[in-house]
Image (cartoon, rainbow, N blue to C red; front, side, top):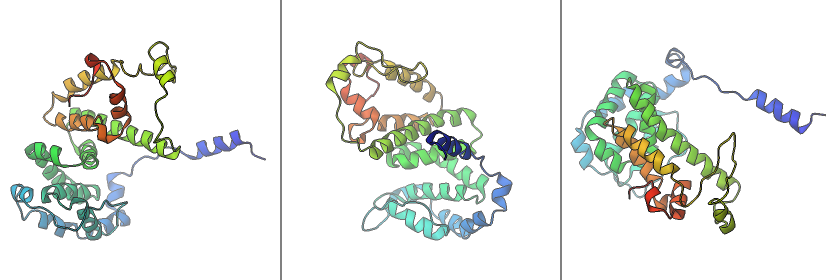
Length: 265
């Protein structure tokens, strides 16, 4: 009979990080080829309107509806995706379509060049209109395809931030603790005692800690050194907002010391 420890070891041994497929493997993949069918027509249609015209056009529809997963048929996937942008501009949908074309391997260099120019020329509009999901998708696209190593390193901070929050919030859901409230005695103890977490790392002195303020100063300095650093800062600001209901916004609500605040609005 296999013990629980042995069973866990077997599972752990069976799971390992897989390496991504090479560009050559994707090029000759039948599955990827099917996903690209019709891409040329999509790309040609996108080039019919200017970005200013796209900004002015609002997508009609009964209600906004988020997609879950992706259809292998490109047209079906893009039609489903368009419902996410009901009430929003065609330019936001254009941005999403470029990402889809790039991810499906259609004329990647050409489509990424359009994507990159779009961000440099329309960054204020995109930062103010795209939701966080699509801002992170933009970060992923730059990380995968840009030749700018500084930008890729900068935006990886945003991806790690949001994915860590997603893990933490998903765990709250799994453990049914999304409605848990702060324990007053434990809150008080954090002001006077060290909370050991893992490998020498200690918990926050919730309410007064300067760690996030100092991190924010470093983050601002790095972001200011690049024209697209605004992308990282926008995402960081969004996770602090009270209506975001993230660990950052909840810690913000518990913070009492003005000089160690880490948010700007």
